[in-house]
Image (cartoon, rainbow, N blue to C red; front, side, top):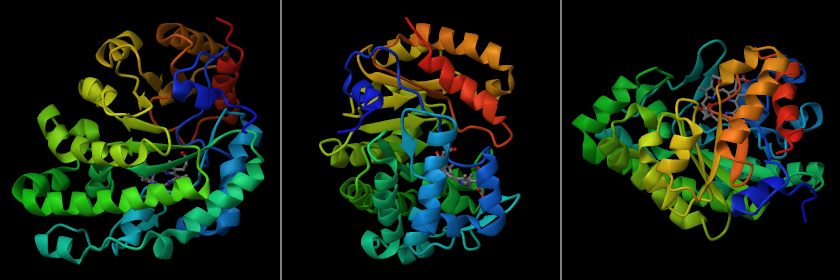
Length: 341
Ligand code: CP3
């Protein structure tokens, strides 16, 4: 039994005395102790070494105090396991020297044995669960197939992912073949994460909002739904789509336990579009953590009032920014913990 089960209760839709809180990308980036580790070990070494991944996962739990931990890793370990080279270049971000931008290259992409290629993730989960000692639940995650395709085809981060879209629209058969391979790998990967001990999983569709609604259905949601179908009876699934407010109705009927929303969608619109029953997660503007702690606290109170304390998980609308002061992150978490509706 997990001692602090607010997050799991909210995922089940049970009533709580206050909403649970965690922050997307809470493990790393803005934490001074993480910066120290960053000087010693490169990014994927940190991901591949269970002791380091565990240490980084637990850091925010001790220093900031959210109600759930999220495993330190990256969505891009999945394409790496599929025989696609992925580097993390300091100052640049993800870098793929050989983008998968032709049908021939798609044919060379493999659906791997996840235990062989990603065993280090499952080891990190087991070690983290020991370290957490059932204090708070542990969240596992994966990128959505569309968001993974964006990096695989574009070869790096982008504001528009124009090359990824061009590939989908000019070579739809190859694009769907790649999306299906990513989906099959992701399902096997998340099932193993559940076996290793995660208490919930989140799908990050960070770039879903770049697609128009019909294309979103075809190139993103269809595959998200396959993953939810495969996992929902084993573990609560949170579907987060940045800029995907237009799909909230469909998402609310998917079997996901909760839906993540960003700050461009007001709480009442998100509730309306998602039918008013499903648990919602979000949606504080990550840049609003630059405000003074006192201002953050007022805004968090308003946010909880707007969503309601039940069927709600307080979070940011996207990942925390790297230069947010730890005290401001703490003000965000504390404000939720102090909420007395
Ligand atoms: O939430 C957590 O704290 C757990 C760890 C986590 C990381 N990446 C660690 C990380 C999670 C959940 C992710 C998800 C991820 N990775 C997403 C989806 C969420 C989102 O923010 O949209 C995406 C798109 C990526 C791909 C990625 N990884 C990018 C674009 C970058 C570089 C820019 C950046 O965010 O700093 C990364 C690197 C990365 N992943 C870092 C961390 C802590 C920073 C680099 C470093 O520490 O060396």
